[in-house]
Image 1 (cartoon, rainbow, N blue to C red):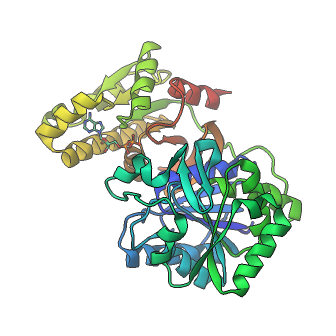
Image 2: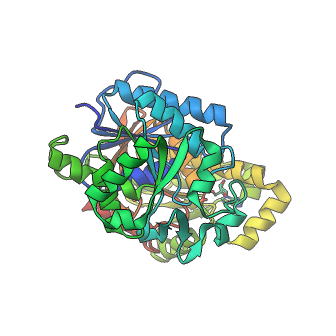
Image 3: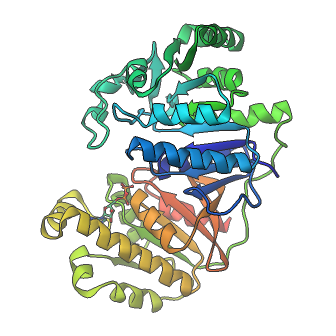
Length: 421
Ligand code: ADP
């Protein structure tokens, strides 16, 4: 099997989001944590490489992205997707523009599009301006982001200082004119030397038109939503086989839920799961600092194999603040992540094979501890949160990696039930 689409994401949960949307088609999707060391083995039709370069130094980000593209080319890919956040999170220097220009160069693209729109999640673009719900990006809460404050809403103005070649717009009227009108506009811009084209989209139908018009570009860039129509279009083109059900290898029983997110939704999910009467162990960072993780692991080893225990550091904002004041925010985070990682490893060694993990950073720590470098994407439990399958310690395991606010209150039960079905 050779790779049809090679995608590069600038962060971990963004990669999972894209992988989950592509997997809705039933086509096999493989997610790699970082650029794999070795040459491609058994590549999937869709390969997504998760990088951590959203706020990295420009040179470093470009080098990582180029290494990822090189690996994807060796897997057979000729079409590429550069995935960034639907709120265009970037600094005045990059990294969206510089990475796009480097990938264009290496993939032989003379033009690419920028479409971070995700209408279902309230991200739309009109006349080149990005909206979050009804607010322009620069007036949305994104204006106060600690790392990438977005104070302008105009994508052309945001992009221009990040790139060396000309920036243009294909506006909503063009997109509403359909595939031919959009293609003609892109050709006209190309003839004028415009390499970077922001494309308006306010509804899912727009994304369809854009994907259809751009599906043969060597490089497309955007949020995950504009990639969603690609599998169906390529199946119709005969480029991809019609797929069956998403990947679902056999995994052994035994589950554990590890929660390190302190988001409002995760707090509700922890409370809902505790109400089911399942065994639960609270990790207290202060206590971990003094006594280590042994009490949690001892507790876990005393449970029956059938129980699906919850181990959580999840706490409300007031107690997180109190902990951070006494231990320091970075140290508190580190202690919890190390403890979750140690519990995951211990659970696996006790024979548990199903892992539900809440929290982006927490997921990173756990997957690293389990030695997981490749995930096969299965069915979605909630939008943007699929079950994934991997090898760990020579055995097949199932994992789901939930970023903070995703999933319904019943997410933990939903996830476990789905694997049993
Ligand atoms: P999210 O996806 O909600 O952002 P993350 O796992 O990315 O979740 O981030 C949560 C961070 O908070 C992690 O670094 C975790 O270690 C830390 N953390 C978890 N519980 C606590 C707690 N009780 N006090 C302080 N920090 C905590």
